[in-house]
Image (cartoon, rainbow, N blue to C red):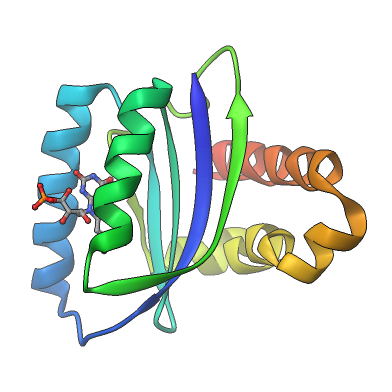
Length: 140
Ligand SMILES: Cc1cc2nc3c(=O)[nH]c(=O)nc-3n(C[C@H](O)[C@H](O)[C@H](O)COP(=O)(O)O)c2cc1C
């Protein structure tokens, strides 16, 4: 099992309907390829966590990277893990209200800061992100 998390900047105005369509087709694709995770959007920044077989994750990430609706800012590969953290979420959309609840921005986004990653190192960052992801799991 491979997993990664990224932040991206939205490049166009996305309505609620656009988002529903995006998530709907993501769920269909992800179910087919055994990919799970979550997506959140706040103040024009997406945060997405993806987990699944490495090949499936890397080929989806190729598509996502080319998507003109956004631009990847920071991408962090957590690498190999034994089990899925979110086995029942083909792509769970985390609403603004839920984000307020769990403080997703604070607990995840700060650890995706490249300067922080450079100073504290890969293992430290990976460990912190894993803990942050476990908090998301506990809360939702
Ligand atoms: C923020 C964001 C997250 C996305 N997440 C997924 C996803 O989890 N699964 C998926 O199939 N497509 C996802 N997409 C859509 C892909 O970028 C792409 O449009 C889709 O895979 C179809 O690609 P294709 O036309 O090259 O086949 C996402 C797009 C954005 C902007």
